[in-house]
Length: 194
Image (cartoon, rainbow, N blue to C red; front, side, top):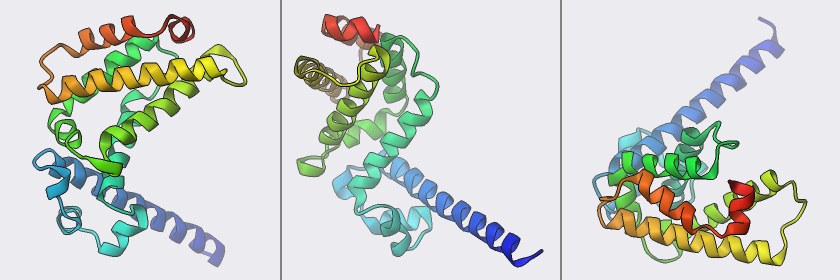
């Protein structure tokens, strides 16, 4: 094998190792948060559970809250792949079923407070996703001020409604919750998001 091919193989191996370390950290957060509140989880526990070094942890995440939020983003992305063209109510249903399947994790995640709170992260992430969805599905180049207000209103409402559902034990069927959220969506958003 010549030097150039050796360098390519080495680079690929390093990337695989890095992705495996990141995945192990995400899995460790999922497992630990399913049992404890985020405030009780230590970086040391995460390192031991994932079997990675402190340096590896900080290569990927500035703190445990960023890891918690990254797990959510990555897991939702994987769960929702291919759903971009689905009706919005179907996307909401898939999201609710995902939350229900990971009930212990999200119940604990919702207990985080302050600037690193999961709810704050989730609202910001949802705003981006709904904006993107509206731009994509409407064909608009920019959102109007009124579109932005509708999105903010909708996201504030659906994240709070879903938060209440999570912390009250997810008793209601997630599909029914999704239908309720969809029914409450402003008509102008619904027009583009089905």
